[in-house]
Length: 188
Image 1 (cartoon, rainbow, N blue to C red):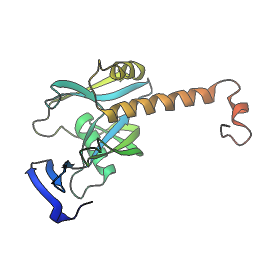
Image 2: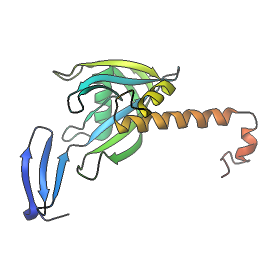
Image 3: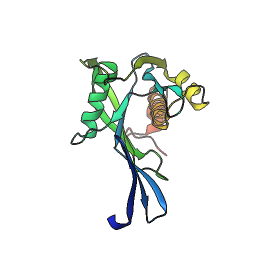
Image 4: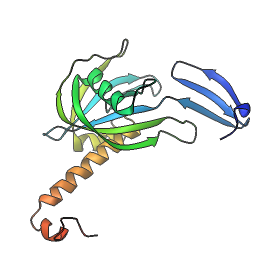
């Protein structure tokens, strides 16, 4: 990383900063974010539909948002789930990754929610969104083809949910115990 003397700020906004490193690399510095994967007992995935001016479309995404200063990723995930879907849950970290490391330092923490229960909450001021449950496989097909406009972290969440479901189903299949061996772990 270049020294601070080699960093020139071009723009500073409310949620991002554009800097030039070593008079060569344009970098968007952005707060970290969270996303929450929620799959119900009927195999539906919770999404939030909202207008996204940056891509000129209405998107369907996992509940998500920025981590506030001083807030942990898990606390931010719980807050976003309450604000966007009026739900609380037990949260388990699934993955952390950069959005697009070629130009931004934004990282997203993906959580899986279980043990859903009602919670008070409302969207941020000016945030217009609609909670929408979609069938997991239908959401995957529509998102993977681009028919459903979404984020890469949502695609990752959908893919994870499908793999977890398929792995669980394979474990319930006749003969699965024999394939796993005596210790219960699958052989590779």
